[in-house]
Length: 323
Image (cartoon, one colour):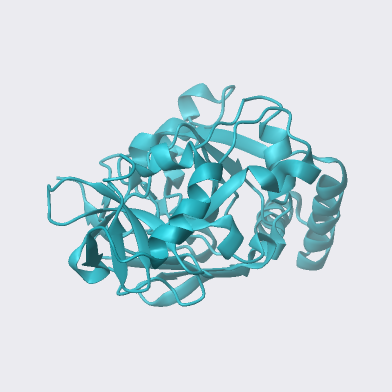
């Protein structure tokens, strides 16, 4: 559990907390090592985000005020920050990650040399950046859990994998958003670990249909989220944040968001051509190279996964088997 807000996270952040196991959850304003209970002002972070433009200046005042109920953050349970309206997830959106996957296939299936395979894969990614479009699918809010909760492995599958991602929270409604205006719709950023059961991703009984995103990605606890929502104004350059994941103390993912194939404006422009975005919607921006499939290592009961993104805080999840 965090002892404080990261020092480089800005003057305040937001979260959802509880004083004890099973106690009432409340929206909180985080400053340093303290949390101000906001439930006397707003019922939930979702309600706050739905009126983001008017709330942001009020939060700055609340962070400097002495009134209200304040608690040491170390005395609180840190819960999932908010319940989103919809979860949009971008797949295959980090250049090195996708180049690794394509190059490996060209070597194993087509007999290319490592040099030829990588050169061809890099050309494909350059063309995708110029003329391609993002790949986006929907996730279930029921898969979410807190940043310090256990990840519970389901009975089905064996290749349970991590995928650490920068996620953004929508703060304004929008449809057909121009890329040059897209950042105006981002309220805040948070951390998500999009856990995936690799050996349940493809359906051998339905080869013509292909992937089974529902089973592979939406088990309970398969989306640790948080600990905080850091307002976009304080998060620095989202195009250059460090994403780091450790599995049992070993660094497995360590990459900058600069490696994204489609940046946040292009992602928002793309998804908003299909669905109207609403405040509280969550958009995951993809995961960099270094997942378990790359290393040939998957999650097992007793494992510990620690994850962080520059200025957004830290997650620590212990893995256990289903009951």
